[in-house]
Length: 162
Image (cartoon, rainbow, N blue to C red):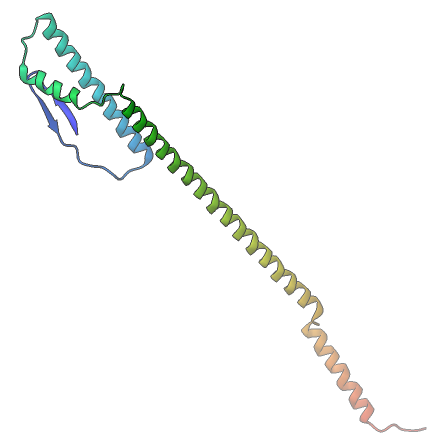
């Protein structure tokens, strides 16, 4: 929600929820929101200083709305607020730590899987290369078969004795 202030009234204007977008877009949106908040706070400060100087009359509705806004702010001096802030900070840090740890485990798993697949591929390549070296070539087999057949034919033929 964004506050739009007129000198006589403050009205709340809804801004549609934009949950999608890139990180840079969300940061840009938050930055522009903070700039808008700074402008609104400056306007409130200017109004209050003009009222206190007597150049503007007091509008009690605006003062009541400002009191409501200020009453919603937390009491940052209380020990309970400090404890809650520490607990929330620790929870956020734990989530960041767990996310980093999970990312590291996934990266390590991918590294191990890659190493195992490369090792298996190297074994297959070695087996193929050794099998191709050990097994005679087709041409060599054909030549050997032809020479064996010719030897058999020559051994079956009767010899002429001189």
